Length: 95
Image 1 (cartoon, helix red, strand yellow):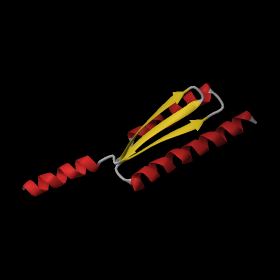
Image 2 (image 1 turned 60 degrees about the vertical axis):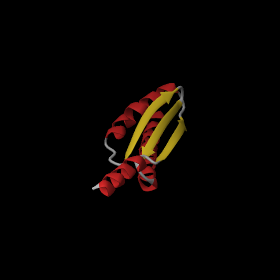
Image 3 (image 1 turned 90 degrees about the vertical axis):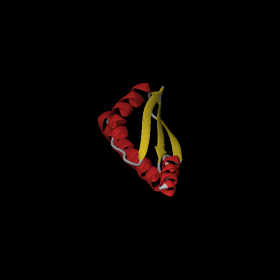
Image 4 (image 1 turned 30 degrees about the horizontal axis):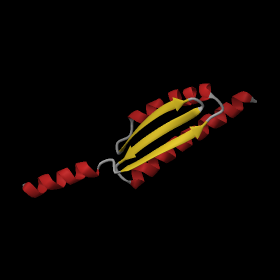
């Protein structure tokens, strides 16, 4: 029983072993706020990672904590894919 408890503590200690901060520069503060609102729901659905999004002037800051490198990469890819969609929609609206 003592060994199982030690293993559980090791799992808890290993949780969120990977971190990353992305800084995305956008055309302006309004674009950063709009992107933040659009991406906000993504922070709530991750099982193996936590993330936060905040606008800082014309910059969008995304902070990610993940259980492992695979979860970190998946979370980063999700945000980059969504940012690509936002970028294409903005380009479509500005033309």
